[in-house]
Length: 209
Image 1 (cartoon, helix red, strand yellow):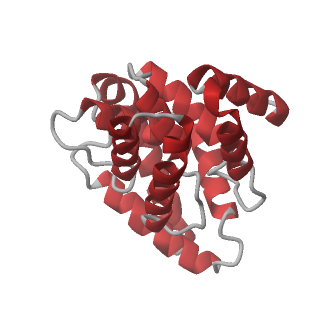
Image 2 (cartoon, helix red, strand yellow; image 1 turned 135 degrees about the vertical axis):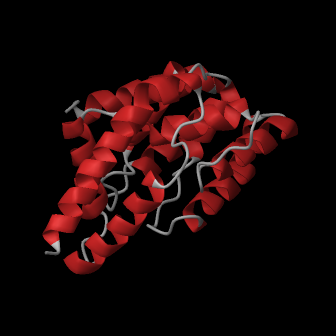
């Protein structure tokens, strides 16, 4: 596991290259991603998603900013968190001098991460969605660590309710025609993601027997 200080510094450097005229905003975002209640939705996820965005051919400022903001607000409420993160981007980015059309595109891309189902032909949406979901197609140990981190973000949730909710989510993901929408994602991450999800589903079923 990478040193948190190293990850934080690398992200700070990345923000400085992306939007040097808004260093204060970068600091705010790093602080948000470092909040103590975060285990999965934390700096390592941000760093991994940005690297994954690069791997699927993304890298435009709007795509990078969408990844930076997509979980900037995190309360553990799917959908609502992304909407609040989009609202944060809409409020903060104009102050950095970003053109209105670019701000609108960042907001749109953040909202794609609610259901990870970009429209056909939406290549920026596909790249951002795949970058956020890339952890699903990682190595088995890394995938399992991400699931444990997700579980740690709900410490008050009874184990039985967690397993039931998680099983429902895994079944929903496996029922999709595609988890990834870029050529790279489908070739490199889709098979691994489905294998990881099936292994987890089996473990969840065994835990309730």
